[in-house]
Length: 191
Image (cartoon, rainbow, N blue to C red; front, side):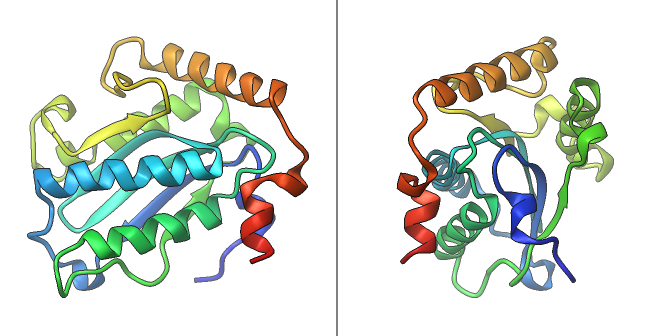
């Protein structure tokens, strides 16, 4: 599959990532893996200046909706970092496909109502697959933003809350910005 140029994944990009297990193998999705997943994703997000608006772990694939919080954010690097550690945490013989599928959200898709609709669509995956009757019952879903441990796509005020958090984090990072030449993305590109 041909990918967009790297620039599409940098800065304030919003990307829906779908990472599928090779041969769609199942049996690896456990509460223990979920804990490990959250830790690995948290490190990838913090390291690359990203927040996860919603994630949903399915029996044979993962959905992630990431949003860049600063000019130096690089979701391509973050996804590679994240995938490397996820593959280490998966049971022997189980791994992610070599290339994830992704959709970089365009301007219209990033409007507040449209983005919230995409997040709800991701969270509803287990309902559409008849794994649960209500998305709130699927324990392998959530959202992650540093400093907001109770963020939940199923909360009634999620749409309003997610934008407040996003705007707050972008503005905080702009106020504390350092030249991109000093950021982690620059260090990784040069190493």
